[in-house]
Image (cartoon, rainbow, N blue to C red; front, top):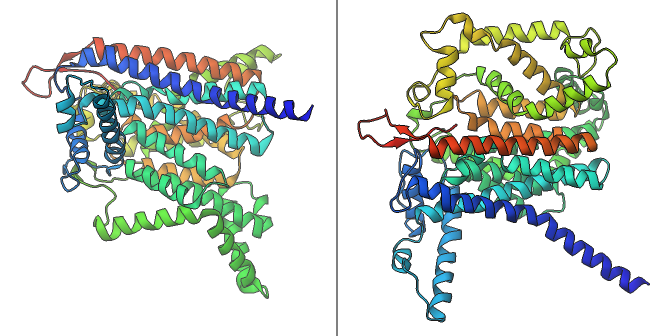
Length: 534
């Protein structure tokens, strides 16, 4: 009967929405529980124990909670997105909580302290712990679903795969442990990118909402503007392919750019009424990317007219831009390391299904298949990587001095002054294979994505002097987004579950070292305890 069927459909849709949000709620509850008990107990619940950059972020957030927006610590180098979010969430929540308790005649011990300054260290850390992982999970899951709808629809396998892939991203070790338990900008800076992008992919989203989310993402971290540029390049390329169809036949980035230039020039200047196509291209690009163009324009005005032509605010001496293309080699090495779960499973399946297992194990193959690495390509990429290692192995003073970060010890292991020079060339095959793997994966998508991705990633990384794994997170997750969005089957579902388990184990190890293996600081003579982190 039609009426009962409609009710059943509504009920099933309602349960489906609950199940969609349930993993995010569980993730927030678990993260907050870990923050409340082991983290706060080890870091000290009776006093403010600031971990490294919290020394700057927490006092600044408290100024914003008190409505004092004029005070600014010049040592802070990011825009105040996290502080605005914290004040907007905490101040009304504390006021509402106190009002409700006072109505029923109940008061709590710290009520007067909350009135004076509602943004305690615990509540500020809770903004990251409760909100950022859940937001990243929901946003990444929504992105995967939107990409899947464009390809081949949904299935039970795809739903389970998407859930575990999104959970793996939400607990991605470099931003989850320990930064989601501290008051750092990284967790929300990452989540805000995918929150905005999930609405950008949905063409029915409000124009103003996309502007607000894009601006919030940039306020959390200035370099997030590169990913708005990324989506704009993709949209413009798609519009150009629609107006000038021969562009779609381009196989490489170089030929793609050349075809774009020649097609636009030919039809605009050589053909009669060619200006109509040009005007059509402009109108189509504006319609597809107008929200991005507005935000990019506003950010450009801020940099040029307000911030003196510099992207960094505050302490610019510690973050001076430099030409550092070696960062791309570090990035692809980072990508391979965190792709180990999927590489292992793929490798296992290939050996299992291969007739010639020894040939499968060998990386090189004379056949020019997309998933095999030709010898000539390896030699070329190894040569470029060797040249970069020779000419562009540079170290920021923070990298050489701060022994609280794992990169300090990795650098000393390979590039320390007492180490032989040849040791720094050992990872060259890894760099070459990583560059090929990332590039070949992007090639499967389209030249437009490949052009946009390498442009944005180079802008984000190659101007950074400091080697910092956190800088690699968003480029890696954007790469993952389109890798994960290709197809879903039993193999990819197993890979997603295996990756989630591996990331969970790694987080457990990292947090155990962070909490239970402190060491006496060598940064000063205070005798305080420091802790290891990324």
